[in-house]
Image (cartoon, rainbow, N blue to C red; front, side, top):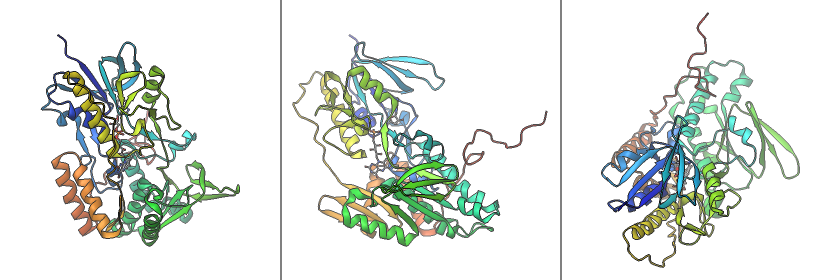
Length: 438
Ligand SMILES: Cc1cc2nc3c(=O)[nH]c(=O)nc-3n(C[C@H](O)[C@H](O)[C@H](O)COP(=O)(O)OP(=O)(O)OC[C@H]3O[C@@H](n4cnc5c(N)ncnc54)[C@H](O)[C@@H]3O)c2cc1C
């Protein structure tokens, strides 16, 4: 008798925890991801600003499942699905296709950055959702200081020493704070022509609060700390244009304001990745405005009892796009499939999310924690933030390495992960500027 085939698409929090629930089960489990590693997205900004290496915040999927004989890790990007035939078509890195038939399908492919209909901004304002994004941001941040060092026109130099971050949610706040901390602490005495402490970091948001989801008290605290650090918050107006030399803000009254900067980062919104739209088309599933798929309370798509949708791409009772939702969804869906393939009765138990709270880093010694009645900021918030992140980081080596690196970074202000690929700041495609003659 052939074993049931379980296909899990996405090796993020949802997919990995679903796969873990299926270890040892008598089924052929395939875990498909377009990357080789599970990425711990909450620390991408530390990779982007030179504290942690990409190795600290990732874990190879093959290593994670090397001892689970029933789980095969496959590299490829899910491209199409035929829900009637029960087959997913994926693309290999060279663009060729292969087919993955399934009996049970679990999808947790995550979201990507949204530019609210202005995809042309992406060229000038990269987002931060993937490892590529973090390494791209690292190149732009360190590249901007290098440019400023050799540009002598003061106007042009000021543009290189001005950084704009769009979106004052946790990622934007973390990134803005880290650029300022990098400039005023780590590299303050490393340059000869420029004074990095003069670096301007501007944080923009259309809403008039930073970290609005944390409530008024914690939000005001965060804004105060950012102010002390020298981050300039520009709230309540929308970014209406971005180009290679700056960005434009528009007020509700139609007023316009321009800021000159060579470096803009975008952390303002999310939308579903392309495969989610394919999935919705193939199954007739409803999607919300950002493209998330409406699921039933057992995380399946209506009319498709064998397709579960997890994490950031699922729309259920307005649950937030956070790691805990994906992780708990992965355990739940993995548990349902496990029961099905082992012939156990499926309990009539809907997915229940247990909210463990939120945490956001602002700067050294300062973080916010919002967990039910517990509302912390400052040093104790920072300690709890650190504990949570180490606990959820995948792999013992990564936990120990990250903790040791943080201690060094705190004690000496150093950041060692600053290597950037050759090439100019916008593209690394041409390692040498000068072409060979003839
Ligand atoms: C910068 C940043 C900071 C964050 N900070 C926090 C935080 O502090 N606390 C918190 O709780 N949450 C945080 N989050 C949110 C959290 O990381 C997400 O909610 C969580 O990662 C969602 O898990 P997921 O499994 O749904 O998707 P993801 O973790 O995004 O994983 C999706 C996976 O699917 C793969 N994939 C995508 N498309 C395809 C395809 N077509 N075929 C095959 N594979 C595909 C991707 O390569 C990826 O591995 C943060 C997110 C970001 C980006």
